Length: 255
View 1 (cartoon, rainbow, N blue to C red):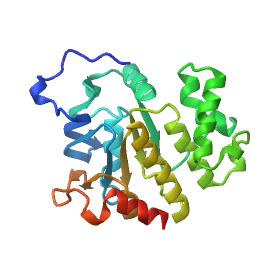
View 2 (cartoon, one colour):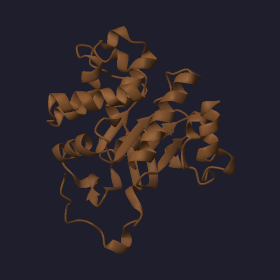
View 3 (cartoon, rainbow, N blue to C red):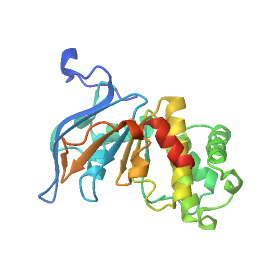
View 4 (cartoon, one colour):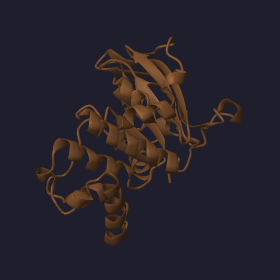
């Protein structure tokens, strides 16, 4: 656990219900605006969809919130920890200990077996070989790829590799999972399985999920959405409409 700095604002200034929040974030890519005055908060166990077209700032926001990028201006707080003020080593320790990440590409290590790829966060954290393998195989079974545990990624399809990447993100049961367009390379049936596993795990383990997507079907699994346009929040987009609540979304995915 990374110890909080003494720079925390007064309790009255902190969003009382939010596990992870950011205020007035600004970030630029080689002089081009990436984020401009973006604020967001997400509660424990909440699934928040970040929507918007490609290039709207979704990935940049996820990387700032997860500590991969340090914002040029603004604040990022996780459970009273000022992520924006932490040094490189402390941010890496926070990411490994409390956060999970899945992107549009699986990024598996080809020399490792499937279960080893899924167990990697636990093995890096010092878990025993036996415990890490058991936990990884449990998640692989939930994703219907337990039979591939001893194979290497080269023997799997891209969709199967993406399921391994999800197992890797879930294996340590992190506080927050950052999902950066994870369904982009998948067909509809594969998207439904991945989203169903992610949302079920989030509900049962109270994992907070930030899901960046431009796919309306994927966004429908969220409790709430925040739209980004050209690096800014779109004030016209609010909570999910009644017809896209969690129950309705689950029906559409299982159809």
